[in-house]
View 1 (tube, one colour):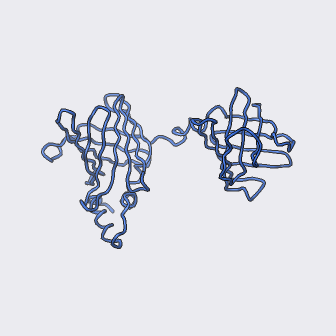
View 2: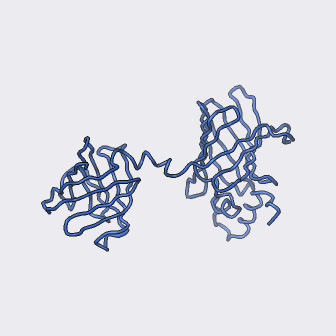
Length: 288
């Protein structure tokens, strides 16, 4: 199609009229059907005044709403986007850490998706602007900013900012690299005998045990708890019944010594202590 769709609001009306009475229309479905789901994710930009901008859109409430977070220097904004079928609108509300409150709508014109927002200051004064989102590709878009007076957009753009998508591995680096990277060897405390080798690398793990026992998959860390937690999602292993299962585990890192208590893959129980009871395997490992 060479002509762009007129308004996202029309999409809401069409969606509402096409479903049975009582059915709920998700904002996520409307966004996807109109080709705007690329906006989900974390973005970064440098403005013309050299200020760094961090921007994130993410789904909440089972895709009935979307939350927005913006950070520019010391300025922080948090908002929520939702569809209101009874008012035939997609709206956005929010607040910032400077005391301002925001109220706006989303529509579409020939350039792209348009977010018209009014910011109300603590003294009662307000400013309205149009933010026009123009997709460049799946990893970049530009925002054109226009002043709005008496409901009309200014003819000249006030500013333009290019946003680049932040890579997922960058966002997850702290989660997957908490001092575990490398090769660890040792034994289990259950008396099974033989040497175990764990290799942690960029969110992935490979485990080799005695008698050709083998596991490979991904790991997810949570170092905010006590004890610290680690989940092993098994993709491949020497025991087919464990493929696709997750081992809920805890760990303790002391220099070059790693203590790991791992539940049986598929168990809903996570160990709370470093012992080998209740089917838990307790590993005492040393970095190679």
